[in-house]
Length: 340
Image (cartoon, rainbow, N blue to C red):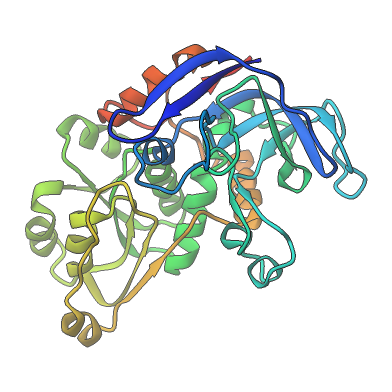
């Protein structure tokens, strides 16, 4: 099979498009023929060494996978068979630790991420645990399902973690990426007032077209937020991290909450503890999402609540070029790789 191989990690990460052996599956695993794989900021973080990645190279990135079951072992309990179209839940899990038993598979004590700790979907075939397969519901386009597999799961979990209520006023950072745009659609469905942060006037106009009420300039986040929303925001959904995370905390309303999944920007993030406790704000991390979040995202996709914004579709051999496009911030929405 052909695959995009990550051969060096760090500032000068490198890729090679090469022909490699099709993986052999073991008991409890399936071989999926990849139809599409979404490109994600996680791939860039792994390649640059900013997120713990594979123990050895070469490695295949790609965590947002939709495809057809080519071979399967031990499938009697899940009702999935050879030839079925499936979505691959991105986080590997044991099913028996406390996190798994409590329904938090993405935080499994022995878990990892497909495309990060095991080979992913920038290939014609991928080997995955049978327990990660979710049958694609009828009527959902394959490329659309790909675009919400990780991003939609993450977006749904972010909003749940923040406890967003209908008609709230919500600030969203990282709004023009795959996760951010789906967060906006979910908030729009909840009739929220949506405020998005961006440094691009062109992207800001496109955000207005899809339902964002107010655009805040990244460089003037606190200044403009304080002037336009003097009482602060009920909720912040942060998908950037770093200094933007720190600035966003400052503009929460009293009793407000922030939910963040952000490691895109370097920097630890800071908060003034006295100011935070006096306002009784809640700050909580949101790591990926559960299988329930994935099922919910698929259902919302089927209902038309989620309509992924596809920036572009590239063939497998051009996946490295697409990652470079994401790195240089020339993407609005989701880039997906067609592997077939």
